Image (cartoon, rainbow, N blue to C red; front, side):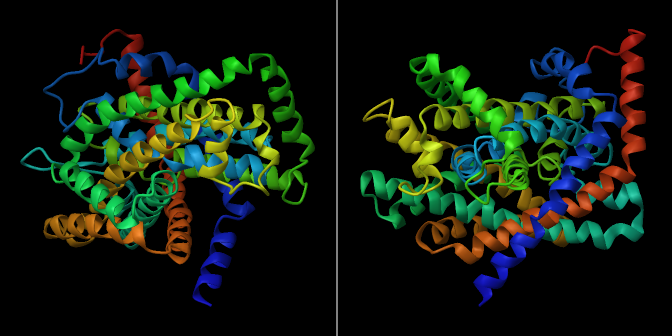
Length: 451
């Protein structure tokens, strides 16, 4: 009964109203900030390369490490299983709507991470605290503290579900199916690995993520490109199917345009987390005196996650024809693995399972930090170590436990996180615009310090 109620709640929360809210906010911020996705893209790349870094700026990690930490949370099973679900239940046209939400989500991410640096707290020892709970309370005033506390609680809850137990469960299932590993052994290995990283805080997470994320992205994209090159002659036809389906809506789930859009936007949001308010927690720790700088760097996240990595998965599934075989193959990781293995025979399944392991591990280390910051906001410094211990323990539980209710509870938390965050973004958009205008003026006058 509880499981059914949770499933119904997820359906209501992730209904078309939330699709409209997230997409509408992204469009509003795209216009409000003057199309930063285009105007600021090149400069964002320069910032990512460290062209303006200054070790003396306040913060704990570099722009590159901050983006890597945020991407390590967003590039996860959503890029493998989520895309497979989108193109099989929503049709290939869902990819177009994922691209759209990725593009407009860049503006949402830029705004939220600009605010996160504007209202972050830098403590005496250099430790940084930031995220939506801080810009909700400080930007909108003390009367909004209950809303900030609600967000902090939701991010802590979500970290245990989609950011932890779901990831561990899917890795344990993949390792068991592929190699016969017992679930408890996979859970134990993941728990130890995550513990060794998160005990060092955001600096250790940033260091590990800055090495792991680029490597796993390049390997995964390389595998997908190999499949696409083998099927190079079919690429034009695949794109024709994708664009035709986006607007005719011949989706397997009801055959309506609305389902194509809903699946595309929902899976795109799950993947890049634009609007949910999680990434600003990581980006708040970046070393910079200019909030707009970190906003520009942050907007590269949805581009890499959705427009690049998700596209690779979607094209492989469509070009191999596996988007029509959802009834004979389990939807999710299994469908993606089958698509890769149909071309890279004997290697495709191993390749996808390895990606699942790396993507899930990276997601868990970053979400541990997100959840910890939510707990810190609510209960103070004393909550940090108990939270980390609980997070590590729940990885093991997630690996061996049936998770239907937990996943639905987590999905509901993800959706609910967006409401207070998006409201704050809209109300504080004027301050974000002023900050970006100030930064552009400094650049135009060539008075910007070389930092």
